[in-house]
Length: 214
Image (cartoon, rainbow, N blue to C red; front, side):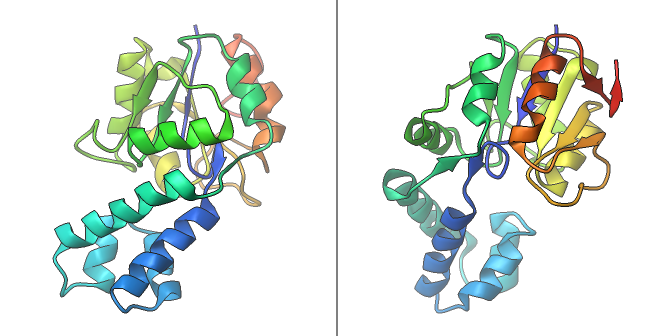
């Protein structure tokens, strides 16, 4: 059996504008330049962002404020699934796929409800592991929960930290939703829609693996 492990934001759900709005509101709360804050936030985890842009502030207070804004955005923001996401997830066998996200499960569930995407049985979120991406821990945790061997898992990612996480876990990693391939991916698709046939073929035991035909 083959397994597919998906990142969420930027891979299945287009959340860029939402993330920008959240960080802009957070920056305004602390009297900071929104563009500069977002530029840092794109490259680092929240606690690292706070250390760089608001070193004089209590990081726990900063994180609480960010979580408040993110939760409100899940309730009231507008979200869209990438083209092909619903078809792909509904086409995968039950128990053969999981979500691996740096976000929190309740927000992921809220976004999936808003976009009508089906939910899997397994979600590995920021609270499920001690080390997030680019550590291999999140993807290895998902594989263990599916009773899957890493070599039987395909990771679908859009960002360098997620790609590194999947590669370090010993899995096949395909990149999507970027004009240029992220370094290290075994195969690159410009969009999720382009990847749908190959991902379904992989899950069925055929198609591409490590960028070559099986």
